[in-house]
Image 1 (cartoon, rainbow, N blue to C red):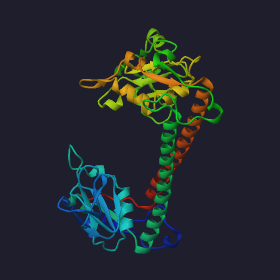
Image 2 (cartoon, helix red, strand yellow):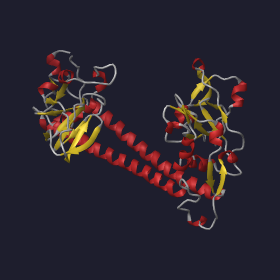
Image 3 (cartoon, rainbow, N blue to C red):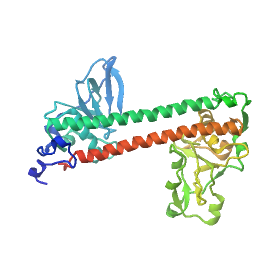
Image 4 (tube, rainbow, N blue to C red):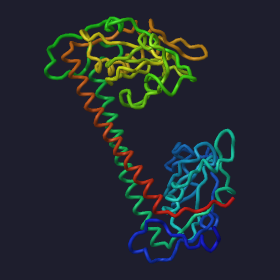
Length: 404
């Protein structure tokens, strides 16, 4: 693309009042603003001025490095998370800040920064790093100030919607966490602190070992042979334990298995799985439940399967029970640490737990399942807003070559 062509770039989408305006002018960042370097704050005292690093807010001190609107980008570490700051602040040496803007609005530059894949400009093989020289050479297209303001206002409004939706998701998750602390006995307690009205006089919860609630012995799955991945039976993996929803049948890995291996490790609706090992202790015995109906699902050898006894326990109640702080604490305490922390079938089977009759179990499971549905819906709305913003930005900003 020639210099002349760059000078007349036009985005795919333009607000009506600017459709007949001139094309956007292409400039390197160094012509639009100055990049400032962060500094050490340790000589400062505690105060009200926030200090930021590449990971975000750190603490507050009694002096400021800059006062005004600024767009910041990580120099080292987290280099793909631009920050917009206003007022007095201090940045450490892992975070660049910008100032002395020329013919451009800081909020507009913030939008530009969000549209850049900063990892493509990484200069290090280890910890991601950026330099002033690289940043200054990046080319961007800039319209007149009124159009910049219109775009910045539009995207700021969308950011506010995204932030509000994110707060809604977090509020629902916090509510669920607090509710679970009330609906299940805490560590060292035998009864929950909150019971639904119809079960106030239902009597004490029963105490048994986890194995007593299983219809058959706990078991390990079949180990994954990478050479046989891609076709065959569906396989539940360790990664499926870490998703916030129940196991998603549509996203399971495929693995070739012999008929005998499959029959020995066949999964049915209501099966619950625990991770066997982890580099961090808190990563052992993380669990999830399978609620699908396919008859061609197996599970990985790095998982332990628990099959609930339907005469004693509602599977979804057990699913939530195993995620409580009390049960998690027992499971983690039973882990054995060498190179990795591991937990065996006997360790899981021996965990002591409390549970009510099935009617109360179902009531608790239904309540928490409804809350999970709300969280999923809210999270999907948040994701949709983020996708909408990404697509909108692709149309609002013309593509510009990067000049090294």
